[in-house]
Image (cartoon, rainbow, N blue to C red):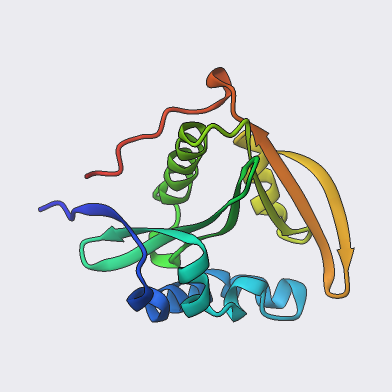
Length: 164
């Protein structure tokens, strides 16, 4: 028996589930940076009102999510998280592809994100997906790496169906 995969928009009632998923997904980074990363401490009740959340479910379980902010000239990925039990199944990559397609549909020429400089494996994953470092920003708690990806047709992977 195969388990269904479903993508749906987040609603205010999803705040607790989003918080729980984000906390377990980012927990591995606490020893790396010596503190909880920003997504672990976010107020998702507020974020759900201000940002878009696409939630990926495997059966009845929230397995992954992507949070985006529509800006005037680009789409910003604020957060992407995959539950540890579902990592390695391509859900993060598929959410990136889906979001890049959304950005194109909205008429944006690029998509942007940022991450901690110490999250080396994430930076390498994004580089492998066509993102480039556009700047580094020193802040009180470390260094933020800002990345962007141009969204021309040949550079964007066609989004795989998410099993819908």
